Amino acid sequence: MSLYRDEGVVLRTQKLGEADRIITILTRRTGKVRGVAKGVRRTKSRFGARLEPFSHVDLQLHTGRSLDVVTQVETLHPYGEAIVGDYPRYTAGSAMLETADRLTVGEKEPALRQFLLLVGGLRTLAEGEHEARLVLDAFFLRSLAVAGYAPALSECARCGAEAVRAFAIVAGGVVCGACRPPGAAVPAAETVALMIALLRGDWPAADASESRHRTECSGLVAAYLQWHLEHGIRSLRHVERAWSEPLAAAPEWPGASEKSHNPHTTRA
Image (tube, rainbow, N blue to C red; front, side, top):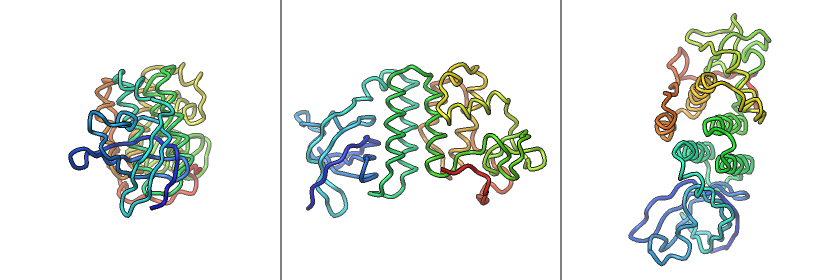
């Protein structure tokens, strides 16, 4: 077996046998890795507590046939300590981990931009300077951009016109009156401005937004993300409870089952 070292964020864990765990980690250089951490469920484990979700760690692994084996772990940033004690931040963080896991489909395929985005998102969430849902929506939008599916927000996703009137998930973002498909949402101009601020990292503008626009933004972003993933994000159910505001589900618009090619959709 070959030995390698990398740093990563623990995305999820699952039990294996009586004392082991399978750890899924998004790493800086290797991409998504699934490894076995042997004996970590025993009370005398050397590094069991270091391999919990949200942890940013430096680790050493042996390459195995199906699963690698974790042999050493050092904590770089224990983001979980600040996140798990606050329910809104915990639910937002869980949704971030699940999204990063879903967007990095292949194992051991380098995903540096997604890794850096996740580390930055968890750090911002742990610091608590911005509302958790703003951090989550910013992460969603930027993750979509990294994957090549950032929504068009400044001009019509279909024809490029600047006079936009609605937001259509199946079209790839904002659309003008002529291109607006049936069932498209009509968000407030302030909501679209908030989405632009979150995508660009303009935190002063995002922090100054009103609650009703944040709620509308969260619904649109969650629906847009889940439509592109083709499956729901399970963690969002808990996010809804934490914020006491139901997030919009992806609507069943005509053609929603077939993703149309859209040359005007912003791509990373």
